[in-house]
Amino acid sequence: MQLFAYLNRPMIKTSLEQSLLVFKALSDPNRLRLYWLLTHVGEAVCVCEAMRVLDLPQYEASKHLKQLREAGLVEAEKRGRFVYYKVASSNGSFVQGIAQAVNAIDSDSFKEDKQRYKEICCCVSDE
Image 1 (cartoon, rainbow, N blue to C red):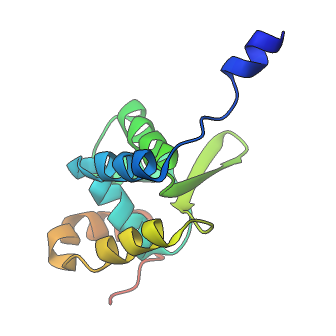
Image 2: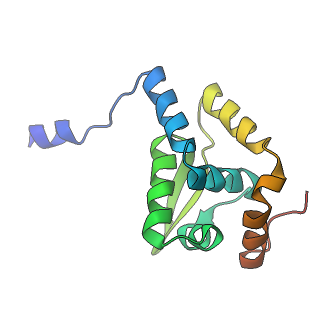
């Protein structure tokens, strides 16, 4: 039983390891699109909404969101059968800086994603 507890303990990552996870997570275009969308929505997004915006199968959208969560960029919350994701609120200055940098990317690059999200959910403003 002690071995099982040892294997399931949370991994303590160094600052460098955590930084590498963040950069690796955002190196994928779909994860960058998801994270950009989450920084602009301002509320939790369900996996089913994310898959429709990115036009991906559910398992791929879930996989991308899981990697963003493991990098500490997003938080997950289970509501009934569904899992909702939002930008992580309790994180260090490095991750906050990353969120600001991603948020500053020209919105024209993500215009189609934002439009699809508006069609799905009317909570994105026309900044």
